[in-house]
Length: 172
Image 1 (cartoon, rainbow, N blue to C red):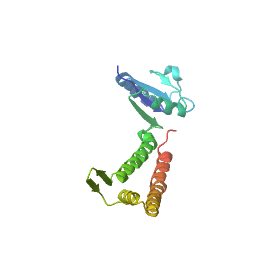
Image 2: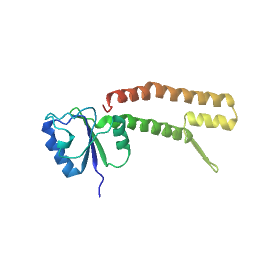
Image 3: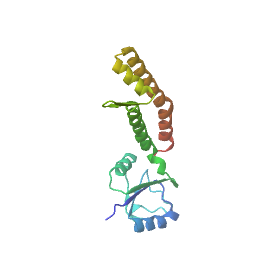
Image 4: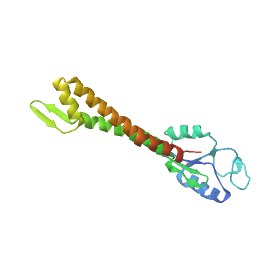
């Protein structure tokens, strides 16, 4: 048995009810209607809709989406499909992945096994050579340089991008 699709909306106009019913029948869709009163033109209440409707809060929608019970989450708010609502969470993952990959790249710039040594020219090799030589001033300089790069990238690239995505692509 496949998991259902969660379709989140705050707007169910009368002319779309047939399409919603068809989606429910074909794709086993579960509808979550958020925000105040039912807004679907004809004045009908939830009981008159031809498919089951959940009425979660915005936070409840996020819990439903994160629950893993649904194979897809589609958000159509005020008549627009808002799939980009996942973008702030995607950026959180991208920030974590870029930090981890940068750390791995720094560490991999100087690799030694046995009598073989592979060296790239970069900050990681600089810090590794200073460590082997016991030159604490160069170690501190390398770590300080790395810290400045990390803070600058976070402050001037990731933070503005994340805040933009958070403002532009939110549910509700």
